[in-house]
Length: 233
Image 1 (tube, rainbow, N blue to C red):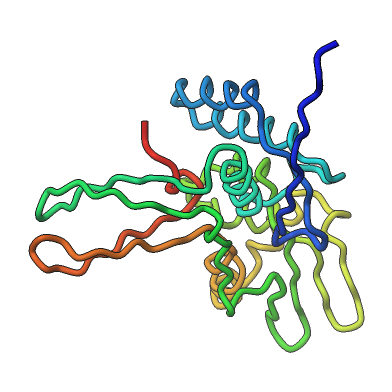
Image 2: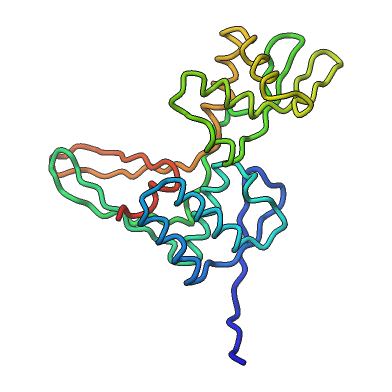
């Protein structure tokens, strides 16, 4: 019988979880899953591969498929850092001096950005307050973000509770159609308040690279989402 390899255990603190989540680094077998998906150039294949690898490596009792997108992205960033290297070398060409520059990004230093104005509870008026749950990756994937009513569907899927006076309404007791009708019945001001407070300020992976080009111009490169932190093949 061949010997077993000792596997280190790490922890990651996710925004949506109260307790740190334990995980192990991914193996050669799991790295192949990611490489095959990446070669397909299909976003759904890549996302499904990421979910499969995270599910394999997660040692805590949580439902990975129900995690919000920003937690999935951060989890994968930490998994990649502990499995391969915490340093990701990115190349960018300056549009003015045309010089390609290398940037060493320390993945261990990247944390979800949380806007201080963000809240998943929004007061609509003096009598009514709505509470939202963070949409899972499953929910995000099935919504066409280019559709005219994308934000309405997004909010209807995420609606958790409605508080009116002493009464509490649990959105899970209603159908998606009923929740959509409720969102559609909001005034323009109420709707915009929800977008600004909940959606536009939702936690996200974000990091800014700064440099001065050959012309002496100060430049900034904004990295957002897990794809921004890995070299393009």
